Structures are given as C-alpha cells and as structure tokens.
Image (cartoon, rainbow, N blue to C red; front, top):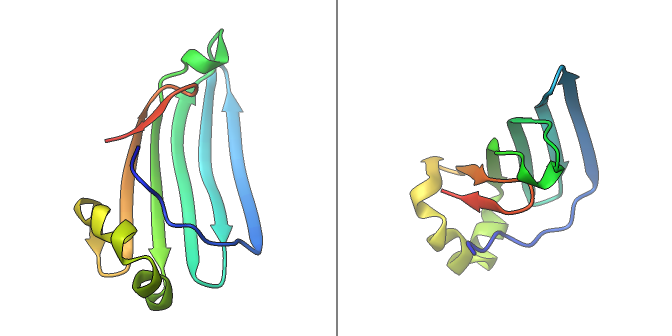
Length: 101
C-alpha cells in the first residue's frame, strides 16, 4: 500500500539464478530518464509458487526532476532514504502478496 514513483523505463535488464529450490535475483534493473530501479534478493521455489517467502530489496535512485514532480511519493518514502537520492525498500511477504517493511 506504499505508493511508488511513476516513471517510464527505456531499458530493462536482469539476471536470475536458479539453484536447487532457490531463486536468486542478482540484479533486475529498470532504467529510465529520471529513475533507476534495482531489485535484488532471493526466494525459495515452492509449490504453490505464490507461497514463496520473499527476501528482496528494491532500490530507487531518482533524478532531482522526478523528486520535484513527485514530492508526496518521496515524502512517504523518507524512512527508506539511505543516502541523498537513494532509497532502499525491503520487500517481504510472499510472491503472491509482497509487502514493503
């Protein structure tokens, strides 16, 4: 229920490794003119898939123009600010119902 910034992305890249019953997202990135997003972490491969518990991190690196235009969204994300211009959001819950902590 936490709002995330809205931005278009020009480039999408990712690397996911599967080993045994574990999926590891080394890096899944979305890059746009005003925002760079990186998702990384791991989760087990379960049956049903939606029950897999998540241990992920979503990093947001907005440009100043986006920060200015979407002030309310970034004000709500202040607790996730790690350095100026970089937000780190832990994602837990399950694959079917991810939760920001």
